[in-house]
Length: 380
Image 1 (cartoon, rainbow, N blue to C red):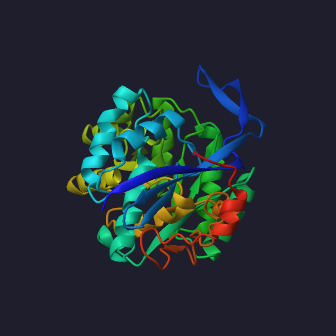
Image 2 (image 1 turned 120 degrees about the horizontal axis):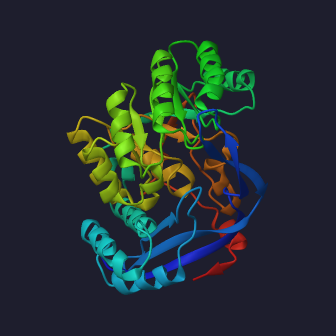
């Protein structure tokens, strides 16, 4: 089998990342912190990559997931130079070739992720098996965690209880306050859901310093939280090492650098994280390598967001790989069901707090092709 063509479908969409302002506010800890304030929405594009073969099998995957949804035209053209004429089953070699090409392309690490995922789609379709089966099929369903919301401790607690009533075994927050300010939310949520539900703290918007992060971590341990995500800036390797040494609660990083598989591996090997944040929008092949490394160290990879194809890629990853804990679900279809806007008819949505893969080979994506082509505004 040979790759004969690579195309890109272009769609218009409202970006998940809107404009924002930055303001400084006092923390009460002899320093100020930067706080984001919403400004306006942004129109952007969604790109879908198509890899065609001489046997008539087409691999399809979105570029990025909820974010990073576009591919540079220069990268697309270079990909054609590298990949057309190659065997799509030679995934490891093609992944490494694209990785090496990154330096000469002056582009971002992980740029080839959608291409790699198209190759996995082709592989599954060729043997009429889902990708989850190709990578080992660890489970039929995977537990999902729910991202809660609310402006007050009472509202967050109520939203969390609602998630538990719908079967979610775990709930994650995205608080943006100081450690002292967040404490009321931590305690209210734990009290509301009881001791048997896993609670996870995502501090990406908090801007803790090391001392504050240690204090917050100790509080989370007291309340039996399951993990402490992005407690410091991901690039603060030394600070994260000190934090991980000081706490028992697992640290989860480096989301803002997870496009670089080598850096992710380095953070894990050097104790700058306990659990490894990953996203298969950067290519399933690289994620499987990290999962193997994590397994050898007795730990897990934890998928961030839906991955590609509005959740289908991470549904396969979570059901296919043994050493992962949860599928990440955002309420109200803000990630997963967004695919319907461009013709995806089967985005994965948790049922009773569990995610499963669809029937079908490859990624199992079911497209309304007429609607897909109607919504498409261009082909590159």
